[in-house]
Image (cartoon, rainbow, N blue to C red):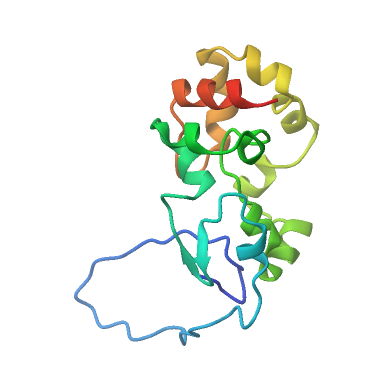
Length: 160
């Protein structure tokens, strides 16, 4: 797993292909977690099998993102509160606590605050959401990956 002392584990990998020698900008620390196992212990689908090793095939976020039948194999209690991106492990990580309490001041960080978001995420509103409303209100909040509407509807049907 990738953990930064500056950003916690709220990171997305990217790459730049170049033939320019840029050297190593930051030293790599192999184990930022030490003996911590909060993410391992709290994961509802037991996807973090060994500290710092995520089994994406078991990961609830990955299962909710895909339109395959893995959702059917999970216990109802594991999925009843989520329709996209579980992130329980992210919320448990000590490196992320300052970002949870004070999100980064970016255009994306501001998307996740306020009463408007709370209104969008009310279960009755989600259940009644047609594809046009989904595209307008919810899809822009899904940074980096847009959940297909039919998969969203399947996941919403699972919520209790």
